[in-house]
Length: 267
Length: 328
Image: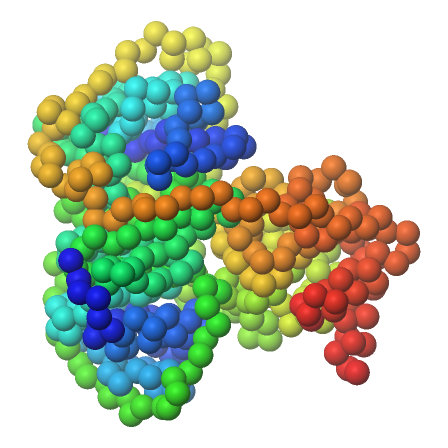
């Protein structure tokens, strides 16, 4: 079993996130592995760990990211959780990509991995916490011409078939598809493991493989800011909220709340 | 690039077609401000749905005719909805596609845009046009702390729009609504649906993602949502929860950046500390109120009004006064 986990380096949601020149500022001091990708890494590792020993020994979990060099931090974190390889695709030509440019680069990287040997499964988180679009997994699947099973709450792989259970806004669904496939994992699917000391030490010396756009079979006209089909033309911080009106309840807190709502025509 | 013209055709996704939810009524309202409105469905609309489409100015409903393999439960899967949207755009020469911002519709919108070579905006909070007639979308990002504007550079624009973007407005006059079938071939790989159980929602309350008022309970409820429900009922509000409360099994749907994202007129958080994850799902609300016994709760930083106190005392007292006020 060979699994590629697509991970993203994002600004920490606890830090002050911001734009400059209509692009997200990626400050290395405040960047981190997208938290939801930890669920993807956990799911991938568990799929491999559930295999019979011989198959498990022959398995490989590869973390793959498209990011500037500071994105290595996301791969280090992936190593700490237990992945075997980390690959970063960096290229100035990719900066400013829209969903389709990002997808093209990710799919091209998976295809290059595939040139070494089959990739049975591509696993992602349910969203990246900076953009929250949740559409890249489905787009990567379409680009690779593979089925996408997305937002999985439960995951099982058996006899070359992927089965998931998910809860959409409309229904609870059980879906299956033959491998190779693309899987995105909800944050309710599992609890990501804490790295142990041995893995943390091993992660320090693991080599990150760096690929550029030239290493991939990629149409450069379709990626980066020039190839983007949408353009962010303005970005401005929201005005600060006025100071909160704070009431200490001494028996009439509920009344104060009701009066606030009535006064502001919210009832 | 598109010409500056009101002569556009705007397609609105209606899936399911058994009812027209307020989020879809919003899409129809936005669509009329951009051009002529047509709807796209994957099943026959009900009589009630047709009446609403008529009131909101939809002259034509394009209903997909699918091959047997993609009928049934599979028709709601993203590749099938995407192929339907793309085929409808080609059929009608539409310029804009609008869909709700559910996870399923987002995927369908992105896949349709991929097939059409169109630009896509996910989670738009507003849709307008610029002086050159290009479609422009406003978005609220980074947990509601930044506003961005995106311009679509392609001829066709595909957008998913967040609920509570506009107040739904019927057309000046109702129109006659026709349903027309059209053939849809699905090229993409479609998973197999082994089982599908539609979710039954509490019909006495508005749905969480579309409600104008939301009352949510967190760890501070200790598992008793009685006071939360009581205030929600007094206000005619939807009920939500924090992720912690859902993980505890106290409630089924959580407000958060990976759960349900809400942007109501009024959001009341009770016993919710306001972790970044939760704030990402509600910070775009117009008015934020919190009730928490911890004066240091981070949610107070983003509140307009807050009570430090015991929610089991504060919420029922507020509910009683609101009920009395409404009875006046």
